[in-house]
Length: 219
Ligand code: DX5
Ligand code: ZN
Image 1 (cartoon, rainbow, N blue to C red):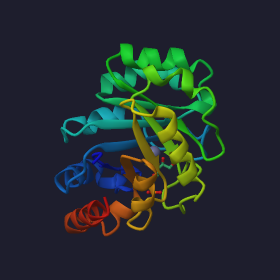
Image 2 (tube, rainbow, N blue to C red):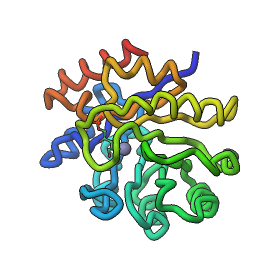
Image 3 (cartoon, rainbow, N blue to C red):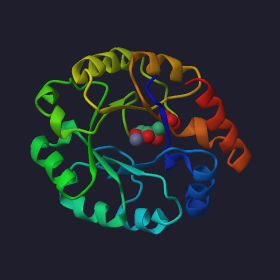
Image 4 (cartoon, rainbow, N blue to C red):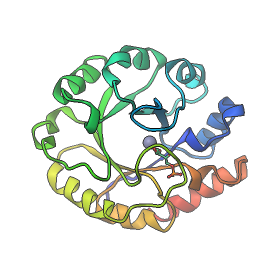
């Protein structure tokens, strides 16, 4: 059985006490820490960048998984690496030289991922499989937490699973994942679940622990 990982998105954390929430979510059982970087340009919302990531890096030893929802990811790759991220995922829609970008991410010592929006095809990824550690299937239109899962994402995940065949590439799903959705996306082939609102609801350690545990029960 394929191991399934849980990556809480700190987009839904309490930014007023972010460091504490990262500590709590780590201790509550997160496998990875998912970092939603938004630039107010590729997506309407704004979040944080390398300095804030650096400031929370030492709080958790879990892998830091940076999801760059930015128009120009190439411009700051070194800064994200210096801030201590372990994985960098860029969006296919805004990365014209994807082969080059993925190569650079790996050359900088990080794992490399590509993310595809609900309306984006997988076309071209078949040529990049050797350079990919992760494919992120967006199951909402990126920009905000707390949106509803888009059902066509299940077929997209199935197509990604077929595309990668037995290659060691993680299939991550992000957006609207909760206890009901988890079994469906796992059945289709997902093995990294990002969840924001479903995990950070309750806003205290006990809730985080229960939320992660009940999601894990569905795996
Ligand atoms: C959306 C982000 C997601 C989001 C997930 O743009 O990439 O990581 O925060 O949040 P939920 O689980 O609330 O949909
Ligand atoms: Zn994300």
